[in-house]
Image (cartoon, rainbow, N blue to C red; front, side, top):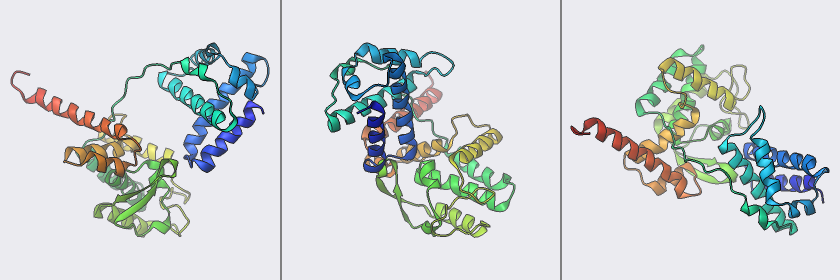
Length: 303
């Protein structure tokens, strides 16, 4: 079997069996397809399954070195992601086809510094909602933008999760069922403020919010895209003088950080965010510890 055929099987497995999000599947496919394309030139022919099983560590290192060169050179984090995708692919072909290659485990990726989440402050979150409402070109668009930002901050949703809501979710219940990464479901309680903001937007929206139609609409009636949401945050943070880290995802970070700062239980926050591992949620404790140290240094007479 060719490596390309194995790749197609693996991608179908991720999409249909593992229920990975489309963006995740696309990223995995790009990374492994790039690796297989390199091997075609490196080996002089399209690789087969046997070729994959017989690769040496130097072959994989040659690929990683290749990805660090040229105009499209990858940084450490992207190299690590590409290596993780290749290893995931190899685990699949070993499990399904018996094509094992333990030698490639000798290849180590770059050592990464773990970056901390960069949430917006409580005041910034309030100002973003108010600014979205007050500066939009049309009243319904202002209501839409305010509802979206309120929902991201109040429920800790990923932007893809918020934009996946449909008219069938109206009126939003007190507890919303969200399908997150990998098809994993979680229940997220909704504040009255978030439900009211979405209801107001729905009343003003000039388009039919039918059961299967997207809830959040662009100005011409199509589905609001993640890029449009990012552009909205770019505009708002420019008006408010916020840093470039004030993105839609920073509202999810703010949700977790502000819950933790006000006594929220770490395990409960893990469930609300849909994290599989508690260690992922624990990064927010580091953010809170940094805030405590900053307060100490500002306030202590001998700091």
